Length: 167
Image (cartoon, rainbow, N blue to C red; front, top):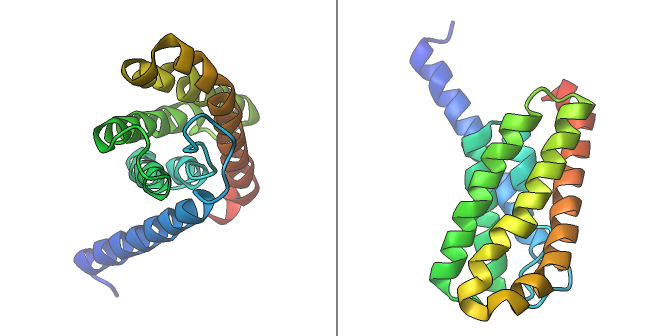
């Protein structure tokens, strides 16, 4: 029989492996762009939102932040590294919110999570671009962020719903 320490180590290793795989999927998603003013809207956050539902809020927060930073790096950090670090933090908080609202896995809770995270991804996170480009850039960024937010959260919720009995 496995002792408690070995079981905890096995669980921690499994969690880290899954997180690594999902960060890798974020890197692939970072290459699938949604047209936007800076070119940083992509399918990079979908694995993070999935991780938040399937593994836990903190795991999802780490995966989604890493995914955002990968997308930003591939785009050359167009709004500066400090700005993208702040955006990664906001994305991590959105993953925690997504987990909090959608954790039951029911259709209504997942729908609410998709709506809240998508609105947060677009209208709230975009506030960080105000120092860079003012209100004009903010309003120019909203449509692509909203489309990206809906696409990423909806795919994550659908995949989670389809796979949750195997997780």
